Image 1 (tube, rainbow, N blue to C red):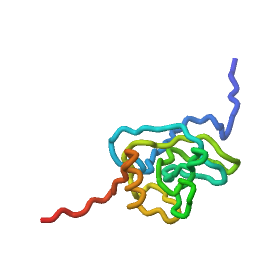
Image 2 (image 1 turned 180 degrees about the vertical axis):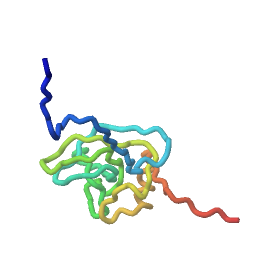
Image 3 (image 1 turned 120 degrees about the horizontal axis):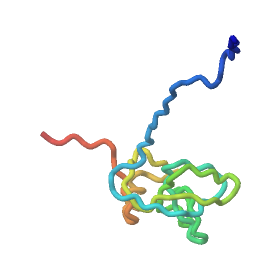
Length: 138
């Protein structure tokens, strides 16, 4: 009795090796304990991880901190932990309320400077650090 082979040709189930590389975004700037909260993020935009947020005083909802705001959100208060799509309205999202972050990786709103963000966030135990240190005098 002979066995006849059946050619399969271009089998999608061929053994193979694949690799995924994790490339960190460099947002976390130190080994201080990270503390997060589950918060409401205002609608109307897509927010990226690392966005500096302010609190709208009347509602307690977070939005990107901008210097021109006059509703309380002009003061940086928290940093967004993950990307959030709020184009359809207010959504829930995670924020950092304590930790050390790379000042070159945070996203600032219009008119907010690193110095202003650093000053406001330090009052909340959020520290912005430079990833580049100044040369030491010889």
